[in-house]
Length: 419
Ligand code: PLP
Image (cartoon, rainbow, N blue to C red; front, side, top):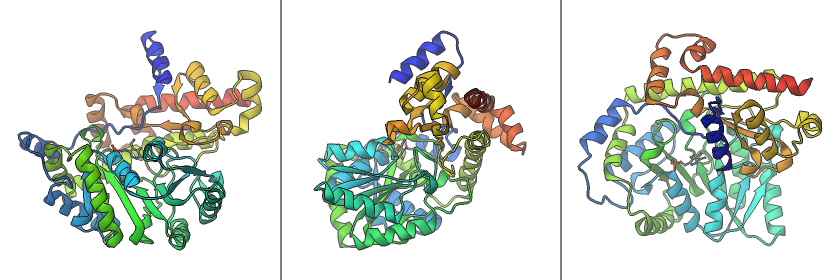
């Protein structure tokens, strides 16, 4: 909020601010999904708590087809965004929670709200800040030494805040430990379809389906965050049956059901439609141009970053300039660094410490999605310019010049630190 106030003040003073603070996809609503929404605007009755049967059937097929997940419709739950389902899963499960450092902000709060203790588990820049099997073992040991009873781990690949993905072998090794320890995995796969690199998407459910809960939804790859439609895929076994019952009870008492017109639109979004597949591919390619360009600019300037492969995020680490930042600019923490970047370069970012990283780490989360389009017209223009098949940099110069300007600003920042 403090950052937003500073951004508003600068903007009101006529200054250009490069907004890397929010991760919200900005592409237009696909016409077929929009038509389905319009056609069902008069659907005003409560729908089943778990979601419309046709939607649950489509979601199960979709996860089988796209991700090779053995989902069944009567273990698919529809929610008001995946956040509600993440919360319900956390509330329904027993035991304490392990979270890799860094992790998205809400998992920690969900654990707190449901009376669970959290152990933050260290990761290493060399592993792209992904949790390894050894890291998980160390985290379990630490949690138990602190008197906790760790039973749940939340994984998120591609990751918000790092943009990194857990490669298949690392996931397989991690799941050997998870299975041996009988842990439950909450696998937040909301960014799965925004992966633009060549790392294949690995779900814990590929290796340990009996205890993996997957969450996803329409917010990211279809830019429909405000429509609030999420999905959860629960294991098809006795454990899953009981969990499904608990989660249904929580949903029934808290949000009742997802919005009916949106569920009808989601039936189309989860149908087997090559037009929609193509659309998601284009949006993902554009996101890859933008996010990849920022990542390349930073790494070519010598700033270490997690290898960005999905989502809208780049996670640079300014530790190589720790001394100069402290001596010349009074920057000692990632929050100081974010404040400094906003004041000096008008770059609005979030500190890694907001995501559980040590304040002294000097990491930042950069979100690219507000850079490429803010208005509907800018979002449409991205798609129009994309049709010209331009090389990446030319595309960015024409369709989203703010991205290029942001990268120039980062370059001059780093050049100044090197002096
Ligand atoms: N998980 C992560 C990692 C996110 O970044 C977000 C949204 O920012 C969500 C979940 C929530 O998504 P939804 O819109 O489905 O609630």
